[in-house]
Amino acid sequence: MLGGYPQVRRYMQEHGERVGYLVIYNGSEHKLDLADLDQGAPLPAIKAESTTVYVVVIQVTKLDSASLPTKRKVVRLTQQEFVDSKTREEGEEAGHGGG
Image (tube, rainbow, N blue to C red; front, top):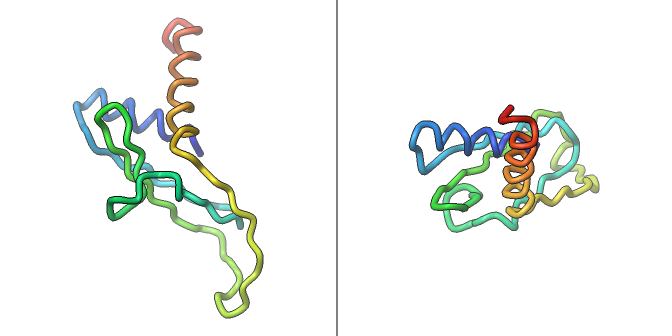
């Protein structure tokens, strides 16, 4: 899930873009908590190094009816985890001769 962020950032860098979109298809029954991301825009956003990546989560797993609420496990994703995933990928590429 976090692996998509470095890919978006790489695309943005290659094409000189300052804004990108990361779409996460949530195929689990877990609720994704993006509250740590910048909430000042219409969508949660990761802002780093003069760029903005908006995050869109699409729930693809059928969940129980809203009228019959169930306790769903919450998975919290922080901005730092997204940024660290980019740093980790860059380190791995450097360690393997650039890919």
